[in-house]
Image (cartoon, rainbow, N blue to C red; front, side, top):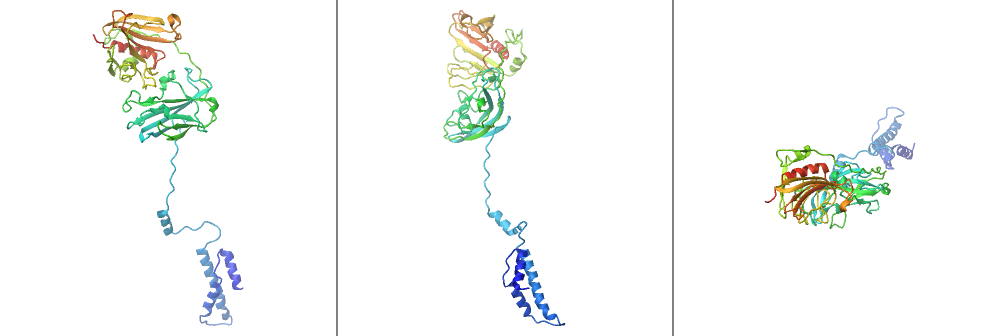
Length: 438
């Protein structure tokens, strides 16, 4: 067997290229050593031993140093691993994009203005609904609900924030649908997110409400996103997935409002006249609050601490509005927000009546002649309200006659905020405790 044959054999077995003179060098080194001969075949031993030794050394070196052509590569040395760990820079983790795809999903973001963070805003995914029973959503549309709550840490710049900062867009980035108009019966359970600050202190009042996006049913197959881009910013702060393509919920049938339930009046020692028997109203007045109207009429009233009143807004003096839920003033400061359940107003002349009178009960309120009344809608005497509409209130006479005025009128109606029957019972107690100047 020649040197070339040996090298080729080892190369084919070990998968590495040995030095071409390796075998010859080993043979030369062995032949240079003195040999002792004890039999006739001993001259052949050194050469055979040299070849065997060369083969063994080469195979061992190649198998240990190089390894075969198949199988996993040997692990790097501990020193190399330490060096790699101390010198390699970890790849940055991408910031996850928030999503609000499932009812109950919640995301908290930085409330942002032109100067950076001014507080936080928490979004909670509501339901996809086919509409509301007050008919505020047409059958060719459905609604995506999102609750929004701000927490202010400083005054934002610009100071206006709220509903206009949020937009629903399709895959092409174009706006989709409209916001459901406020004021329907759905407003009781889902008061709309307002435009702040209005006439409120953003550090002491809740800044919470619902975005109710009215989406055409034709868009049910689109992926929809919610965009947060506050006033004054050229780019959105965040764009998050709000709805994946899928069937829209079925339309909701419109339910006509029911007439007010019959009520029972009861005498109470703490009130100067009878009031509607209502345990919920009694519980509300266990924790009372009070406010004062410093303008014409100058009344001071006691109302539930859990309710909200107003500071001076537009043409309305302080202590004119009362609401069971938080409200905010819209673009027109003279317009009564839909959440307001009871309104008090000073009138110079006759307050009048243009609907069908159901109740007329003379009594004394705050030491003045007054009448407790209830009306319902109708077409007579110039009335334009539907028959299911009702109004309940008090007219307090300040002048010589009610027709000549002035008068104070407090009232609640079926198209105002809150529950009409509860509002009536609360109004009874407000009027029973009102304080008027002599």
